Length: 235
Length: 227
Image 1: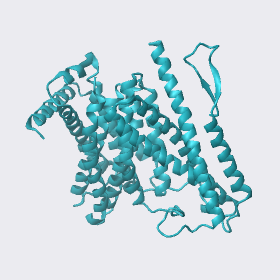
Image 2 (image 1 turned 180 degrees about the horizontal axis):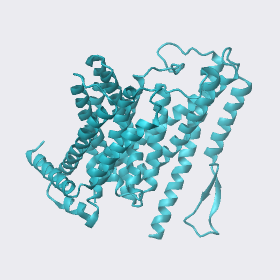
Image 3 (image 1 turned 90 degrees about the vertical axis):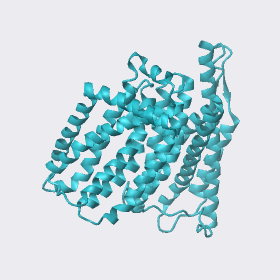
Image 4 (image 1 turned 90 degrees about the horizontal axis):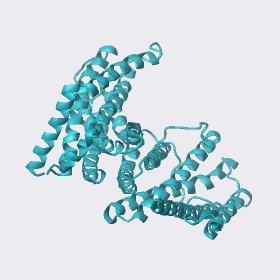
């Protein structure tokens, strides 16, 4: 959040609301991306305006996978180094990842309805994304149900690692049902098959969403840090 | 694996099964749940629209999964009373032995429920018993290993949370997807009388899942019971 409540550990008169420049930069970047996507990027000939949702959907999916990948890495290193900061990082990244996965799951059907003619289909990628959402919502619910900080960190790390191991299996088993999802357009072996203007908008969207991820992650991390500090001062 | 790990695991499994054999609470509730679910599923669909035989594989796997969860909840639940888990942790045995012993007891529990539920589905849904049935039994064993590997680990975590047994299904079910999907698909293909080779690809997924997750959960288990 751009406005961050800081100094929860201080007496009320010293607490203040800090303005976080990184969050503001991220919001401006995302807003600029949308302005460009809506007004300055050509319409796709067949899909029409529906295709524009792709500038939210694809970068949100990228951020979700990035966020969950980092949860798994931070979880693995946590079990090795036992550094609380890694646990707070995993917690923050999982929460931001769930938000972006929700964006993916909401924007997908909105596009699918006019283009595919159906809100939802049990396609490999859709199903995988839905299960990612379930795994990490479960992860967050579990975090909320454990009071002891060290126990919570260990359980979360175990779940974070097993969740990452599960993804290839879900992908494999749902892939054995047939897939309908468009294949990758930018990150593929041959050259990107997107006109220059659209490609630029998409790359801008990827960059601004990644910046938004970093800003949200940082804000959420600072919140976790202050919560832990508050807990220590009460104990 | 050192021989004393195996003998310790067997002793723990024997202890859990002895408790279950004397009380029979979890077994009876899982079994009654499975039988009730078989009956309820039958009436949940219009039998003139969907033949019972087409429902059978799905019903079978939904029942196995949920009745398994009922039993898995108890696995570490019984260690909570009088802090029995502390005694187990103080015993001079490796953490892997505790996991293996608990897992073995759970496996026998799940297989025992399956051994009764499978014939019940055959009976109530008029499933023709053919040569493919031995393969269905093999699928059931492979799937049970995967269910138990995940469920045993999560049970040890769930009992220490505020949500306790409510958390186990939420954590476990996403992990059961790559078990239930191949198992149900392979069962459906076999019950439809298609050749075993068609189910082979699904069996490979199951086998790979078992190998990866038995190893991963055994490695992860010590982290869940540290004091």
